[in-house]
Length: 484
Figure 1 (spheres, rainbow, N blue to C red):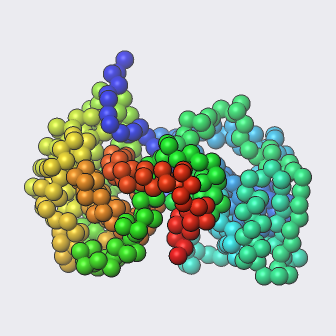
Figure 2: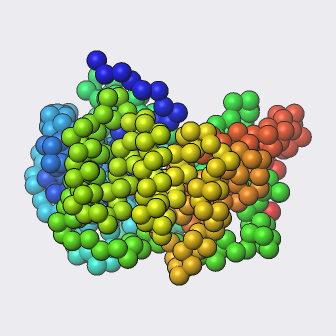
Figure 3: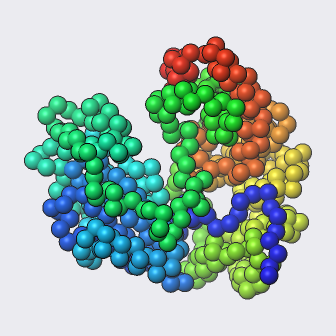
């Protein structure tokens, strides 16, 4: 039996991480399914599946409500056996008496995104996991072909409220706040039999408890009611990392809106972000396919628990030999050793990458990340070539990809946290937040933990005051919601 290696981070295959790479969207479409009578029943699951080269399926089921709430519930599965996919379809057909039929992707795309847009007209956001379903679906854009979808009923939104629906208070609050009089109706139900059948139960083949940590909503997405519940529960002794970091940003000395006015931080603001490709490096079609094949094998390889994957390493080395100027393949080789726990070897590859490609930003960050995992705090500035601002390293650029921002500033957040420079670390964290980086590319566990460990020294005394009643609920809520 292969020996399990001890590592300071969770590096097992994470479906969320895979989706965020954008690679799911590159998989070929496998099936698009709608119930035959979807236009009449108004609330129904939409099934969309893609197939991997290994025969597994990545798919999502979105519970669409055309009457008002849009994407009301979401299930998604990544790289699962087709057997599981078929079992879920059978559960839908048997348990919900739904007769599915294949349809065009254009139709289900419009059904989903038009329902979401309709709900947003009434201030109703889609289910929190819709962000992951979107990464399986094609990107929605103004250029996508539009098809007519029957929304609402009788020219109005119809909001059905069920007493056992935990989002019912939210739905009602939003439609009353944003809906214009006469454009909606509210109907109160004692139960929703469709949702009762739709929810997964404990006897299903999959176990959601295994991935609880992935789906917990960060406090950065909490609304006023969430913070009010938190205050009332008075659980201030065991604060999670995200609560510590968020609270720090609300304290006067660490308020980002105030800090950006300080001359020392102003130069960091002279950039913009993008999610469009920024690389000027071109690759042949043959090279692109080779890179894609390596990436997929790397994503689904259990390097953390196996003694290694000699075939994968041979494939990477063959690619480097064939395409010696391909910096991406060098980065894949670094990741191979990083994930397999061979930090000295990953450090060696990072240094080689920096030498061969001195203008490659990810060469710096790979070097720094290896040092982070080795606990070499003092060496991080040298690893980053002593550049503290991303535009100093790439002076001909003003716009940077969100992954570039995350990779460049994460090591500095770790370094500043570990060396007691909390204001600098907090500023860079909020800079990434301001550029919408951390939504899709969260901090490395070790970086987040380092920031939280330093931040708790400031945050803990504040919560002692809260616990002692020195901070009223109104003051607390005003602070957390950013009100003056």
